[in-house]
Image 1: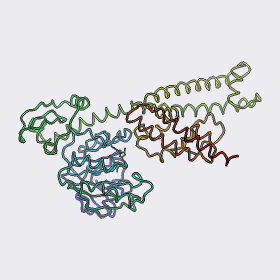
Image 2: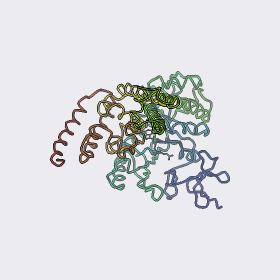
Image 3: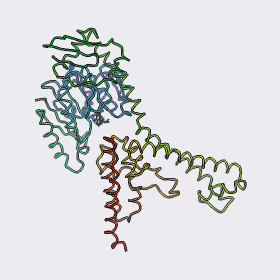
Image 4: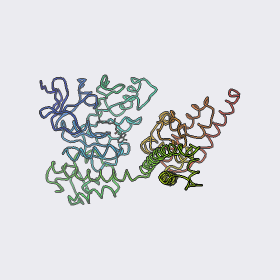
Length: 208
Length: 295
Ligand SMILES: C[S@@+](CC[C@H](N)C(=O)[O-])C[C@H]1O[C@@H](n2cnc3c(N)ncnc32)[C@H](O)[C@@H]1O
């Protein structure tokens, strides 16, 4: 098997499969100290497979909204220095807490990202990552960026078209969301996540 | 001068200098408890960017590494508490009760089937309700084992009744508008399907309208028939009681109002009794308009 570094430090390609370094955390396959990262189970993995320029770096602190059980968070923690992981659904949050107990650089926050009560806790972050599949998600991203994102810090926002408007064409939805984000951010790029995810896109943006 | 309240204490800053502070010992329990009790105001980005530095200066922690590990321990503790309380919320209880009803229905169903097969051998009637009645009027005429079965079934029916009453009570306080509009049990089912009152309140009406046909829904009433194919909403008397031609339309009107009711309940809990009469009025109009077609 050929191991090559991905252009994002901390990410690797084992032949053509994406991986990060570490022990298995949720039942994913491992190979020689590498954890395989399935782009059909993680939108961030899909984005990295698409060769998008994702602003990730080893020293970063990330605020992650919509962590769910922490599949993506667990890989992200292999790449960056610290992840503040926000999730409000108690059932999946249980798994997230179990994960944080095993991984030193994940801090779980069981809160509603729409009404952030983690103000006294979260420091200034380098990257805001959002995957909450919510009609009001742009508003929520803006609010969190205003409170927690470093000046000129980056944001990576996942848009699931069907969660925002089932009737409109995905492209129309992306455009509308990008416009809303544009009020606070400079938009750097928009990537559709096909063929890994249908009707999903990722927006890479930067605080103006 | 800036006064900031952080997870490790209250700090006063003047021209970037710390001029006052009241910090906590690195006691995880005490820190977690304070986060739970106190109100915290937002503070500006400049201070936010210095949290680690300030905590080290004030000797709350001795290094950045320790900053992260202490905060992580506190937040894990806090997360666990929150998860426990979330499961103790009224809507979590309602969901459990609804699951309980489904379990009871399934048991009643199984036991009744067994019993009626038995009784086919000895008596003429095969309807479960009649069976139970026959048992009640002349229990001695039946075999002891069959009597036990019948006894279990009626105890389960009682338990179902009790569970339903508990749901009604919880629903009246937790979701008064939804209860009035959809009925306590149907409302509870919608909450359970959505995964909580909050999620239901965030759902568009179109989703609510088609929200899953529960397999166990009123199975005990619909003995022997297949489970309903439509969404939960189709169990509402206004929908079921209408001509099939207009059921879809009525379901849509109802779903729209249910969405509003759920939001009202989630965000304010004030009762708006007019919601139901508005729907009834609209349905009445539709029914009159549909009349010529049906006759
Ligand atoms: C699509 S899933 C995220 C999957 C996850 N990012 C991964 O790749 O492993 C969306 C999650 O966001 C959560 N969510 C939605 N709205 C939220 C909010 N306002 N605050 C916190 N979490 C939210 C949901 O409970 C759900 O678990």
